[in-house]
Length: 138
Image 1 (cartoon, rainbow, N blue to C red):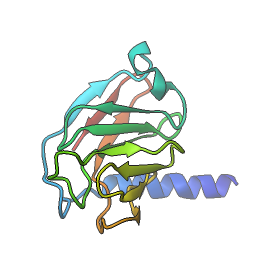
Image 2: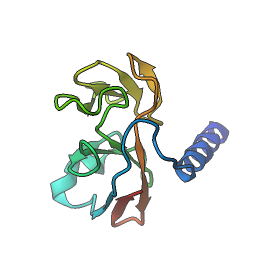
Image 3: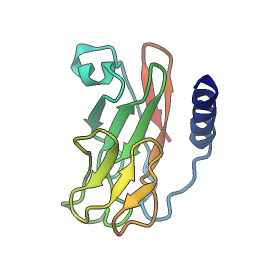
């Protein structure tokens, strides 16, 4: 069990280092800091918790994977990001991101496409957490 957790953490760290220009979603500047322990972000105090923020192309979803790992995704769907009614949201099961318009679903752990017309993964932003403050940036 410990070995598989170590492999998973290593895979996440490798994915976290390899950022590229997304093939469909425009590159916009993202750089903000929050304090997840603040009562304003109480949902980020538990594993699997998430919050929606402004920024990026259509907003940003910040998801807490574990004590030290936060994932951040743009709410723009890689299939129909230009449509005003298209927003990614966290599914009720907390394991998927779902597009409100085309219905594409993405894995919340890595942004990969699970179903729907989308062919490209969700756009992921870098995160850095020091135990007090969380920086989301590209």
